[in-house]
Image (tube, rainbow, N blue to C red; front, side, top):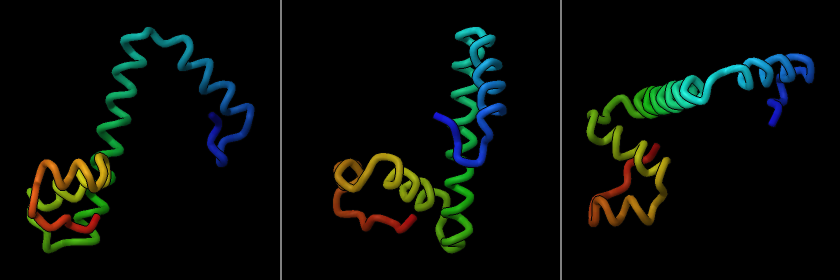
Length: 83
């Protein structure tokens, strides 16, 4: 799927680069991108809530990633921190 800020030509080049990568490299890149997204999300949580300690910020991220139902199962009776 092409991003709205990417031209069709640039998208075609990007797809070509991905297709030339080995499976291992694509997996490595996907993991790197996932970790970068998590760091960005945590940075946003910390910026919005400078009073959160590390544990509270991690719970807020967990809530965003996994939803209210699973959050309540993992931390029953704990208030869900705002992301």
